[in-house]
Image: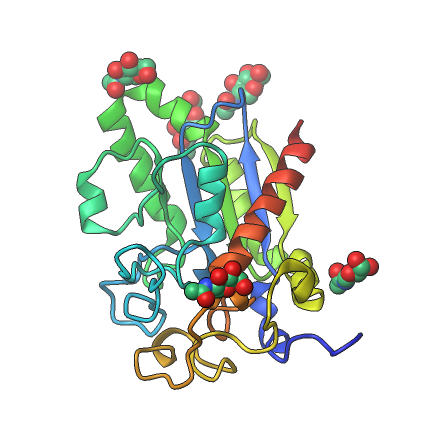
Length: 260
Ligand SMILES: *[C@@H]1O[C@H](CO)[C@@H](O)[C@H](O)[C@H]1NC(C)=O
Ligand SMILES: *[C@@H]1O[C@H](CO)[C@@H](O)[C@H](O)[C@H]1NC(C)=O
Ligand SMILES: *[C@@H]1O[C@H](CO)[C@@H](O)[C@H](O)[C@H]1NC(C)=O
Ligand SMILES: *[C@@H]1O[C@H](CO)[C@@H](O)[C@H](O)[C@H]1NC(C)=O
Ligand SMILES: *[C@@H]1O[C@H](CO)[C@@H](O)[C@H](O)[C@H]1NC(C)=O
């Protein structure tokens, strides 16, 4: 393989993600639910004492107001682009976000990557709240016609920990399940990075680009790049926004062709 893969990739077994999109009924998608690891997380850990955080600079630096949100990226995640691709104008909030809790839960919620939480238990709690808020028929429609995005490094874990309980314990038994791999597309981008317009696929943007992730990727990290859109990876573990856009568009194309 010419030039070799990114020196980062061997550190990336957990980015060998499978995305599971569970889609039911008419194409109208009322809500989105995200589960899994930090690749789809939007800030459930912000208030907890944990090193698995991204609510400080330079995370989020390419948002309009340069505010970190808890996303492990310079800006949007593949899950954000997926929400846009299916017509959402805002993103399902982190379930544990206090402000989000006061808002209505009708567009879904993000349960991903909370360290001290059992994601599926929070999902159950959410369902109860949704029923109280929206009434039984509407809540049932939202839950059973929502899009479910589940991200995990291991497909066994994905199946046993998320998908089986989601399907069998939550009355989602009639859903169509599509499992999409984003590891291969990511590998394609790394291998043929210049075809995708990237200048750098071996080092990440943050810091030296070799290890800095979470608390190691911070305002004092030396060497952080100026233009993350030229980098395949944002930090030592997570793709840049530019990569996430490509991954999300690819997911949409493959997801739609698999369910229609
Ligand atoms: C249920 O959904 C319908 C159609 O969107 C809406 O008109 C109605 O107000 C909703 N009911 C509740 C309790 O939110
Ligand atoms: C599944 O649906 C049945 C019938 O609608 C209901 O009695 C049961 O409580 C539901 N189970 C869960 C886990 O929601
Ligand atoms: C699944 O579909 C069958 C047949 O349409 C229906 O009888 C059943 O109630 C559905 N189950 C759930 C949990 O929606
Ligand atoms: C890189 O691009 C070439 C030519 O388009 C293609 O044949 C090859 O499969 C790509 N490599 C990867 C890992 O996708
Ligand atoms: C950042 O890089 C992208 C992709 O190479 C390029 O299109 C853009 O103009 C650059 N932006 C700046 C501010 O240099």
